[in-house]
Image 1 (cartoon, rainbow, N blue to C red):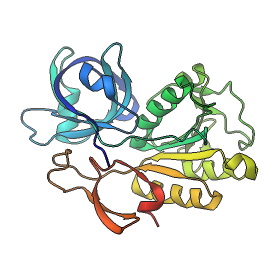
Image 2 (tube, rainbow, N blue to C red):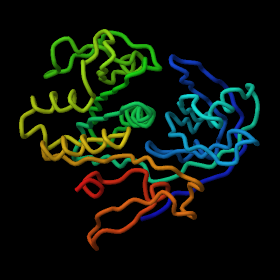
Image 3 (tube, rainbow, N blue to C red):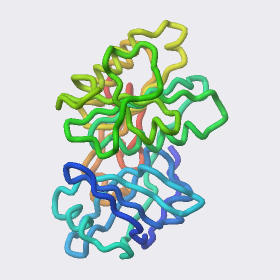
Amino acid sequence: MSHPTLFVEDAELLARQACAAQQFIFKFSAPKCARTAQPGQFIHVACDSQVPLRRPLSIMRANAERGTIEVLCKATGPGLSALVEKPIGELVNITGPIGQGFKPHIDRPRTVLIGGGYGVPPMIFLAEQLKQRTDAPWKPLVFMGSELPFPFRTRPSTIMVDGMPDGVIAALSFLDEQGIASRLSSRSDFPGCHDGVVTDLARAWLSTLEASTLKEVELFVCGPKPLLKVATEVAKQFGVPCQISMEEHMACAVGACEGCTIEVKTSYGFVMQRVCVDGPVFDAYSVFD
């Protein structure tokens, strides 16, 4: 497996947006990282001189022309709490973009993107990138799940989606404005959301598709490991391919320490692979057999 080029650069903190439930969106000037970043990759951030270990953060957006990247995180623990306190204009050392990203197949343009909790940012990056691509008739459909208030403005969707359960109409406003269909799921009784876990919403919608349509579907998933496992079961149920972004504790994030290895099924049998550089994106069936 090839390993994309990564860079170490002092990134200027350009903006910090506070969202609900101690969630924050950061924008950095990081031209080298922004130039090659792909959905599913992440950066490793030196949050503070008093916190020795860096923190991995998924890339939510990358603008190669402007040389900027955006990430979303929840301010938990000493590292990310220290990052939140940094003043605008300060330089933050980052390494990135790291890892293998998502690889959509042009023969399956009906992409279903499922993000749960901290798995939301890569799905935004992927959805917006697919909307701009012209190499296939991409039709991204985004399902987001959260028990916390969503860190983005929501509204009733203006995009109708056939087969959606009655009353499930809440969408992310900025995706709706771009013509990207999205629907939200939560067990926190948010208006217009599916009442349940996001994988159940995806399963309900997939069950309405004909066999010929399912041949054009591919799933992309990021979130907690239980969500990834259930999403893989959903993919198997409908016979569609599925790519998942794994999460493990990382010390170095460049493959040297091998502290983030997981067992992966290959044509040679089961092998140990590093989530940071061999992933974080894997074929779902190779991880959850």
